[in-house]
Image (cartoon, rainbow, N blue to C red; front, side, top):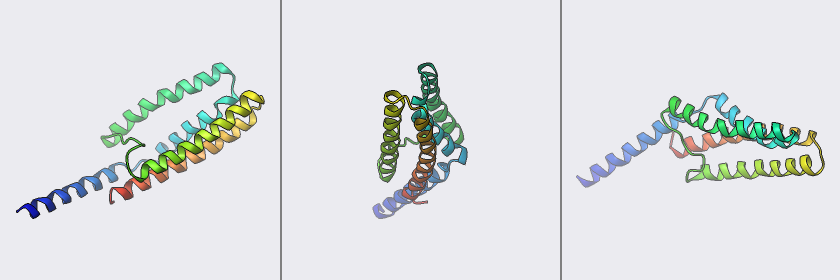
Length: 145
């Protein structure tokens, strides 16, 4: 009887993970929004202080809106820094985006270059969008779907 119960529990776990993976499939706009947020952060040093702070405030306001949207659409919000291979993807994207931001800050603030931060912002959008898609694929694979 214990073997049957253990197998039933494992089957239930796998079914729940497969359902989570299916529910976690995001529409393309969700990946693009994440990319735009990352690109906006990277590009922000191209702007004067008032506009830069407005951009940063808008990005911070988008975070709870995305969480609310995910919960409404999927019934849950999955933290990007969860255990597993998804954390490796998330940290990799974070390292690249923060590196772009650091270069953007130096070029924008120290060299008064407003073009380089905008170009790096475009790269940030692409990297953020692609990183979000990769993160989702890794998550779905980890959930066994």
